[in-house]
Amino acid sequence: MALGSVFFCAGPAHALQDPTRPPPGPQATAAKPAPERSLALDSILFSKDRRVAVIEGEALREGQGFDNVRVIRIYANRVLVTDNGRERVLYLERLPQVRGTQ
Image (cartoon, rainbow, N blue to C red; front, side, top):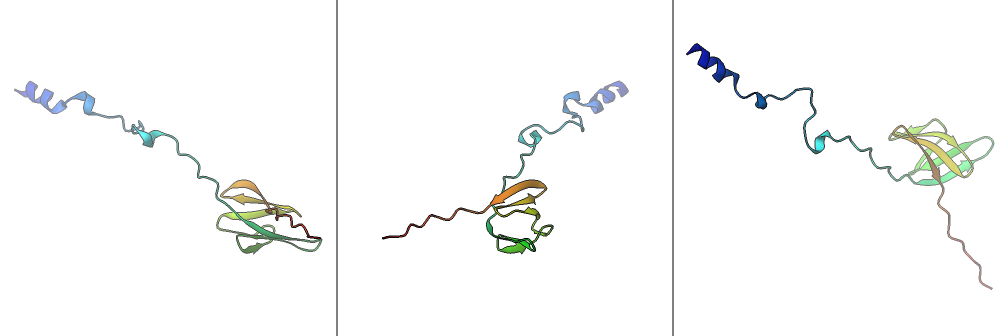
C-alpha cells in the first residue's frame, strides 16, 4: 500500500513546467519599439548670440527639453534632438510658394 501511495503522489511528470522557460504564444516574442512620434518644429531663431527652437509650442535652447525630448544642437535650418533616447533631426516645413500676379 505504501508503494501505491508513492506513485499516486508523484502525478504525471508532463504537468510540471520549467519555471525558467518563457511562456508560449505571442507574449514570448520580442517587444517592438514604440513608433516614432510626430514632433512639429514651429520655428528657429538663429543668430550669433542666440539660438532658440520652438518645438510643439515650447521655446527651447540647446540643452533644454520637455516630455523626454532634449535639444542637442540648433542649426539655421534644422534641430538635432533626442526623443526617448533616440537621435532625430527636425526640419522646418517648407512654406508654399506664392507667386505674384501681374
